[in-house]
Length: 441
Ligand SMILES: [Mn+2]
Image (cartoon, protein in one colour):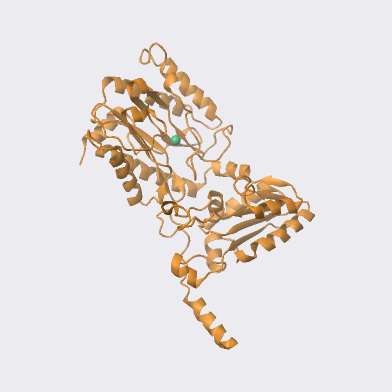
């Protein structure tokens, strides 16, 4: 083939590559607006000081090599948070310098028409990538390692530090070990800065979290209506998960927990293989992931649709304990203090429900956790609450001797003056749960 004909062929192949739709198209959550991505990167650069940060995308899984049922690619949270795209074998590089303007590079694998026949069109370096990420300088990922070594050397000469996601990458990856050793520069963990940023949600994150939690509440209501004596735990799970997917959730935020009777007292029971018996309570801890954000909601329901007096007393104590914690949420409050308030409330209001002791001895876990891109999201627990932080409030009482377990878990966002309940779409009071279960299809 002559050089001219070869060029013509290459030109034809390039033209034959399909145009790439913006990232996240097909997800009802839509793309992350570029202004949010730009603001997040600017904030991280501000926190970094002088130096270079390297943030790789997630490892790609192999359909042949790994368990096929695990083959779906999920982007690394920090990479998605800063770029808004899902793109294996890619790198985000941020260079912060004392006196000069910061630089941002996005390394993406060059497009490959043959590979794309198998695995679909993907984003390569170029104007389309710039459009969806707001990063002007996009480059071929094949150049990344060589250019990074050089950038790190230059940065070191200027007294800059090397910022890595320690633990996630530097420990296992040879390239990062070499980069860290060879740089001679101090290596700083980037994770605390990113965790502090992700702890306070911006408007696009809150929009996604509301969607995740709304979908989750609808799944819980559907599962409540599917419950009856003789139904199986997996039926309720299937109804809820089907609802999540049918309303646009990409995946589960965590494996669903549906436990009836004695299984309700096992905190992370995930077998879902028992049959519901009249007189039992079912704990359902299920959450959707939507647009990369997790919901985490637990409801406890009576199999017959009607609580027994004993079940209702325990349920009401858990609910009142949760309300005591909710009422104490305000900016400046701490998670540990909320835990103490909840525990003290349960102890004081146990009456003789758990005689000879008090019911708090059956409250065997913490009150809650940060919620975001991960179900147990990043963030230091000593951080005082501030507006737009999102977390769960989930007291429980588990009495194995009575095969009785109750957990009520809701998701809240901190406001200027208190909190907003995000998961109120799933009924919380005993009366409301009974009402929903009465109106079965
Ligand atoms: Mn939880």
